[in-house]
Length: 281
Ligand SMILES: [Zn+2]
Image 1: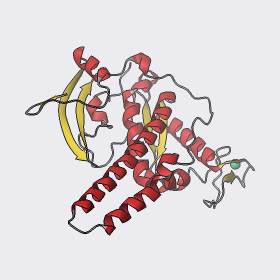
Image 2: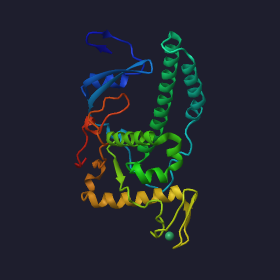
Image 3: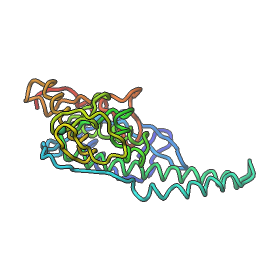
Image 4: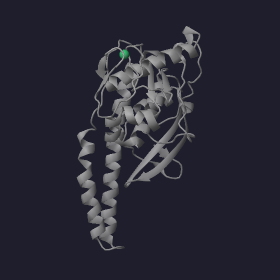
């Protein structure tokens, strides 16, 4: 990487894919942002790039199978807590203003950065698995229903991470010409029977299974909610895109609130990739 005023610097990540795009004129760097966090420097490039090759976009896959279930966070995240505590204590034991304290603070910051990187890596694995196998994804509004329906996942990776996952799914799906629909936050996805549409009165978080008091259907509660979301997405999608030829390219992804141009290394907003309109392929 060559920066004005600084010169050529080595970077850790593999840049071959990007260089190939730049060399063939299929991408253009708009600007770069240099940041420092947890003792590491990182450079983020804002790139305008061509659409993914059609072969890299995916085929429809709607076979009704549960394709991914994330129940617990990776071990790397669960085991971070004792280390965080130990490093935090080490800081408080050092004399304020001392060189040892500064060193301890740096160690704690590096640790936080590592944990953050692991969490992002995990979220990228989940979002990649989802966008690579589905041309249409429905996600629930995080604030209310998403937290309840996915309480185990939410508890494991925190609500901030949940928002990050939604952002990753949205921009990756845009790259692939797929669709992301955000379900109405008042959609009773957990309380509706996915077999008959009956709305049950009460369902506590302790109930792992949904049992319909209308038709007797019994199903895992998360799977029931997922089926309801898929059905909602199907209806919503069909009502919104009248031209079947245009379906492959329609994107109804809500833009995250307050987002402008994104300059973080792992994230590009849909505006930046410039593939948005619902036109026939
Ligand atoms: Zn039912």
